[in-house]
Length: 450
Ligand code: ADP
Ligand code: ASP
Ligand code: MG
Image (cartoon, rainbow, N blue to C red):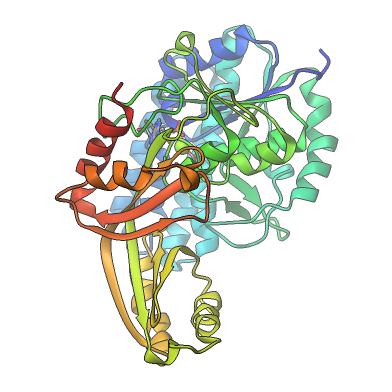
């Protein structure tokens, strides 16, 4: 088989949740011979259990209970495979996991936390390779850590693109001509040989990076919904699947919280111009969404994304009036603490900034040294419990009446901050967490009801 039509296929947690789900994915691979590289997430629920297991305060009996739950999820699949060798391999991994968890219980480290988190993908990928074999596809397991080289920023490791490309060409590409290779999303390895992870939901990004490194022709993200919807279908049943969407719009959606894609997923795809398909592994026949560079339709309103758990920090200082260099000082403090600002608005003497809370640590971080240092420069106020809503589309910044259509709809909802103008693809604002779903529903009804 030549590689002139390589598709990288990624299956998320629900797609590999149990044996029946894995069989559906195996059929998808079987039905399209261009699917040569398969990237899998951990079986649904496993990473959440591993996150708990990796925490400092978990005692021995809870550790045992968590490992039993994970073992049950994996053994329910193994029971259908009748493969002693594989069952033994998974058993060994679970024993190793228990050891590492014990070590973590005695002496917590972020490094060990990442090792713990990696076991979900290590198990699901081994098991899925076997399921492929069962449906008659020659599938082989590959440890992605051979190629996914990263720095040592545990929990949020940054991939070394050059090394990835080099190693992928050397170790992966030759195998792909002979077999379907099954590998792990989400995990990598640093220069010391320690396991790292790329951040929650990172398997989409892993698949896109591998597609780029191998110059794949397509990337297929198989999940539990029939493509990208006009908004999260869990918020309103009015949401509907989008047939095609441009890289620019989809990237904004991912950035602004549409959980369907990890925020970084489209960056490698855009660099290499690789079209990305998003579909449901439960209903592959229903099609899905094609994300590509240029698309025929460019509606003003394409979708609404919602990101919860936002923190708004407002800094205020009369010294800002007609002065220069104040913002630089504020940002120097944030940079020192590696805090990244999302939205920002300014007035004569104040600046409001939003921060995301991807690891649940934002509250702690913002309550500590950062605030003290900022308080030496200015007055600081912090508000938690906000949600960011992004209306994504085309030419938003040049279309008359966008503001009216959006904000007239939101009567009765307190809009805390608005950002518009920097991007042609979005208008964003903050609302109180409790009003977020209502705001999205109302907007969706008004902007998408035809
Ligand atoms: P996977 O485990 O396959 O990576 P995720 O749970 O990470 O799946 O992402 C899929 C989920 O994303 C869907 O079940 C849906 O609830 C949510 N989602 C959020 N925004 C959107 C959107 N605009 N379109 C489709 N799904 C969305
Ligand atoms: N298993 C990892 C997570 O749950 C990565 C992923 O599913 O994309 O975050
Ligand atoms: Mg995901």
